[in-house]
Image (cartoon, rainbow over all chains, first blue to last red; front, side, top):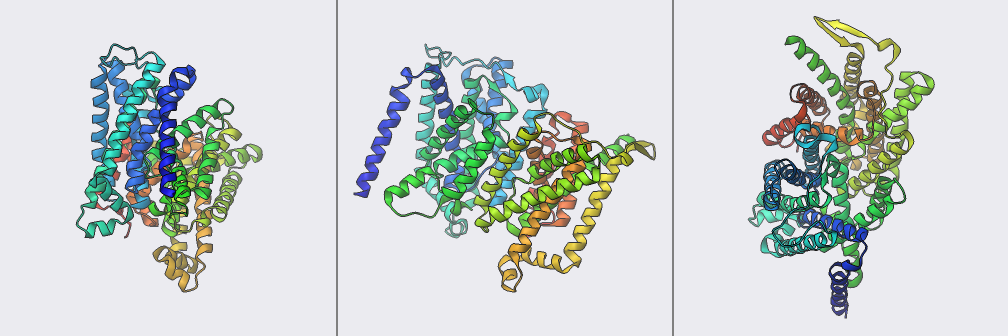
Length: 325
Length: 285
């Protein structure tokens, strides 16, 4: 009965998602189409962090740095050198992956909160680079005027709806790739590292390498989101990659439910919606995020998706946040 | 050239002095309670803002420095007593709570003091400059260096030579055993947290006349303080002191020599220390 209930909820969820994301957008106003595009891009970003936070149990405080570095590479190549879509997109991901491979050497040995301290500091050095390297990044003003790309298809991406569907395709490809990734044997051994690193080491797994690869792959998927964002917004500034931005991504993952992949995407949708919705009425967005944070930890530390799962299964599991800590 | 070296070294030292006031509390709080306090940079910023308001009303810098410290120290105590204690030794939930507070503090500061940057007035008797060899150097910066040195010596004496300090060290070494032999670990932790908040806020007022106070100062300094903790080692007072001086100097020479990459130069000491000694220069484990 419970299983049936769970699969029924899953089917209803899928149908709802299909309706909201695929069928309905042509009937939305352009405000909502833009909002949904934002949600999908941040959805990719939140899912990419979930590989690290949810599946490997390592909370990174510098994830926005990778989002930003990829967006900056795209912005610089597209505005200054007038490069095409493919060059920009691939370079953004490649540069970010290389940065994460270097950073990974410093962070992969760390565990628990120490991991978080180092990733925070590293993320802020990337922010510092964007903020101070004025000749390259435009400093505080950022880079604006990134044109919508020509992706080699006979459609114009200047139209918000077309752009939305292109982003949706990217979102689905990323979702499928990440789902295969975390369900692979490697993904399962990542979970093993999350549950008990010492036990995995005794079993003969190279845990350092697992953490390293998890960090790099998480950054690479984050870079996809960053590159898409540069094209979506046409503008990138240091504020897209500072600590507050990293904190928002973590909130998306924690709120949605770490280790569920689709949960963080949902969390991203909720946060992006709230941010836009609340900003229309008040300037006090940070005050509200801060309060949501404190309340989430006090009352729903396992995240919405896990809350739903537990409710369906009955009984309450140990929370993800407690386990990760 | 030697003039340049001397000026930049002194500038770096005065910045390192401020970093020490911030990072020593952060490091000790981590040492005793394993809490990564994301709101620690906010204490620095709030301290500077409160100090500013008090100084503008009373015209007394010293009063402002202590008012900033005490107000924020009490805020820290409330945070620890009311919220963090609900999650003893659970690193991630505790950190998330401090994170929530950091965001709330940032927005409240913006609401109360607005978005304009302020510079705190320098106290009357410390205005002007003095000459060291060929170099003219502001007195106030020398004052900051000596205050931080005094605080460092006081903390060291307290930590190494007093009974309370011994209890504190016991709590850092082994939380459970310290409680087992009858030490009131929660009380020690609470006081430690309050003291850390006081020191950070005091540092904020001290730094006010040099680089002012503005929105965003909180996270900018927080990450520098984290670099200090990474370089110096967690929970070590000596580590905080050496780390602060190192980071202060690297940051300052970075700003003078390669201004565009100045924040990024901090990557170098961090990478070298983590590669050679992952626990930091004076860290254990």
